[in-house]
Image 1: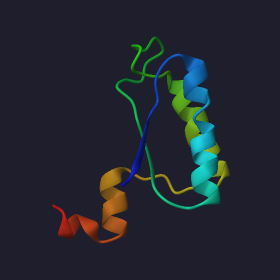
Image 2: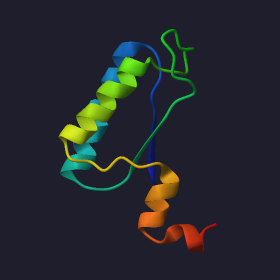
Image 3: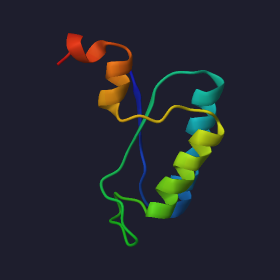
Image 4: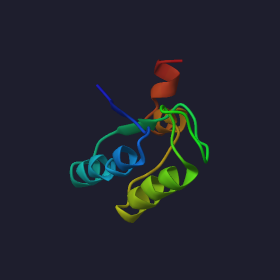
Length: 83
């Protein structure tokens, strides 16, 4: 099972997601973030560009690899097994 966490409004919720990053940095594994839209005025299911930037920066500070799912699958040779 892979963890998938939604980045959405309100902004306080989105910024609290750093705890998920801290957990995966402490106990390495997979963490998938997803959102519906990224805009300065996002829908209730989306986030602001600054929010995504803060989450990515936090992950980089914790030395997490950030990859699209397809590249992560390539890294482990799973893409060929599950096309």
